[in-house]
Amino acid sequence: MNKENKGFFKILLVEDNPADIRLTEEAIRESKISSDLDIVKDGVEAISYLKKTGKYSKACRPNLILLDLNLPKKSGLEVLREIKQDKDLRRIPIVVLTISANEEDLMRAYDLHANCFVNKPLEIKDFYKIVKAIEDFWFKIVNLPNR
Image (tube, rainbow, N blue to C red; front, side, top):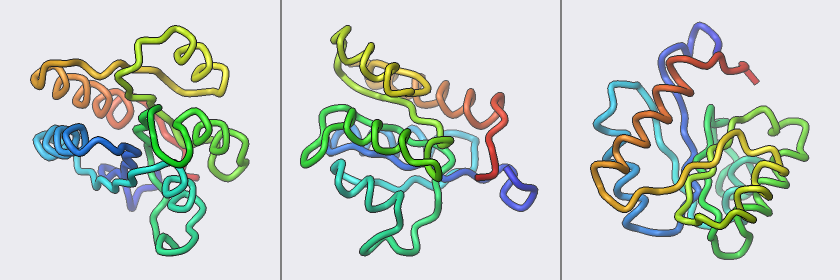
């Protein structure tokens, strides 16, 4: 992070489930980390946001992507593949945050260079703990590149 943005982080949530969107928003709002959450609801929109096309021409590059696998229009794995093959986007950390407990999804996500794979917990309090742990790790412990 550069000094101007130190302590403020942009998160892109790629999620189509309204309940999971609301929970993530609430968990991030409760955290002590200064962050801004942008939300896109399908894989095509995610790529448009990241490549700053269409209505996302002024989008800011996220410091972290929270990516669901089960998305309309373009799957989370397809989005992951496209991001990690793009030399301008591949350094953005991607946390696959999904309900899938399928071993094949886990292996494919790591084969496509996901930075981590996290199962969404069923209990609300556990969901909050997971989001806080993700934020703490990526924004307090890890050094992120400027670009």
